Image (tube, rainbow, N blue to C red; front, side, top):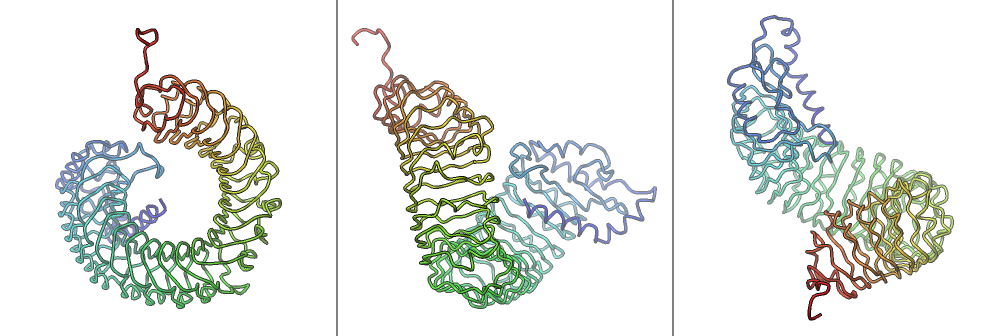
Length: 599
C-alpha cells in the first residue's frame, strides 16, 4: 500500500529529526548506556500478553531483560535515558498476504510508555477492540499510526490531548460514530487519515484550526452534510480525499484556491451544481476525481489551464454538452480521461482526445456513433472503454499498433464482424465484446499465442459459432464468458489447464456431450454456469473438489444421476438443477435405490 510506505518514511524522518535521536549518536559511544526502564518493559510485555496469535513473529523477539538492546523487534529507545520512544510494528510482505497478522487487542498498558514519540501498529488485520483512552497519556507522541487493523468502537475524544501529534492515521478499521470535535485541538497535524471506516456525521467545524494539514483523507466512510468552506484555508494541503461518503451540496469554490493541491478526489458522494470555473486555478493539480455525483452543467474550459493534470475522471454525473474545445497545448500532461455515463452526445471522439498521447480513454455511454475512432498515438494506449455506445464498424484496423493495450471494452455496441479475423495485441489481458453482433469462431482469441496473456474474455450475447477450442497449459484466464451464442460441440477435457479460472459461463449455447471430470481440477472456480445446453450424463463427483464455488447452474440440460452430495452442491437452490432428465439427491428428491421393491 502506497500510503503505508509514505507513513513509514514520515516516521523515519521525524525520528531522525527529533532531539533525542540526534543526541543519541554521541551517546552511543558511551559505555554507560542504561538498560530500558522497567516500567516500559512491563508495559510492552502486557501488550504482548494481549496478542493471542502473532504470525509475524515480531513479538517472539521480546525476550531479553533489556528492551533497548536492539533485540526487541520494532522497539527503539532513547539511549541517554533508556526510555522507549519508538514502537513500530508493521506487517511485512504484500498487501494481499493473508497469512501474516496479529490477533488480539491493544492493551491500555501502552499508554504507560510516557516517553513514546512514534507508535505504528499497522497492517495486523486481526487486532480488534477499542483504541484505549490511555493513549491520551502519550503527550510526547508525534506519530500515531494504527491503520489496517480491525479496531472498533468510536475514536476516543481524548486523542485531542496529544499536543505534539503531527501524523494521525486510523484508516482501514471498523471505527464508527462521529469524528470527535476534540481532534481540532491537534494544531500541529500535517497528516490526518481516517479513511475506510464507518464514521458518520459531518466534518467537525472545529477542524478549521488544522491549518498545517498537508494530507487529509476521510474517504470510504458514511460522512454526511456539506463540504465545509474552511478547507480552502488549508494552504499547505497537497492531498484531499473525501470520496465515497454521503456528502451533499455544491463543491465549495474556496477549494480552488489551494494552489499546492496535487490530488483532489470528491468522487461517489451526492454533490450537486456545476464544476466551478475556478478549477483552472489549481496550478499544481495532477489528479481530479469527481465521478459518481449529481454534477450538472458543462465541463469548464478553464480545465485546459491545468498544466500538470494527468488524471481526469468526471464519469457518472449529469454533465451535458457541449464539451469544451481544448486547445492543442491544453492539459499537456493528460494521460487518463474518463467522461463515461453523463448526458453527453459526443457523436465522435473529440480531436483533442484522439490526438493526445493518452494511456486510458474511457468514454462509455457517450452516444458515440459510426466507426471506431482512429487514435493518433495508438502505441501509448493501455486501457480503452467505449462500451454502451452505437458504434458499428472499424474493427479491422482498430488494434493496429496498439502494442501497449492491456484492457479493451467495446461491449453493448452494434459492432458486426468475424471475430476469427481480428488480430489482438500481444499484451492484452482483458477483452470485453459482449452484446454486439459478432460471428465466426473463437480460434483467434483462444489459441497458443494469446491464451498466456489473457485473463478476461467476455464475448457473451453474440452470434459466435463453432466449437470451444482446446486450452493449452500456462493459461492465465480468470474469467471466460461465452454465454448466449451459437457454440456447439463438447466441453474440451483440456479445460483443466485453466487452473486460475474463477468464472466460467457457457450457458445458452448448443453444447453437447458430458461434463468432463477434469472440470473438477479448477479449484479456484467461484462461478459456474452450464445451463440451457444439451449436456448429458452425470454431474461428475470430481466437482466436489471445488469447495469455494459460490454459484452454480446446471438447469435445462439432459443430465441424470445423483448430484454430488457435498457442499456447496447439495445446498444450492433446487432451481440450479431444474429441467433435466433425472437428477436426484439434495437439494432435489432422494435418489431411488436400484433394484428396490415396488419400483
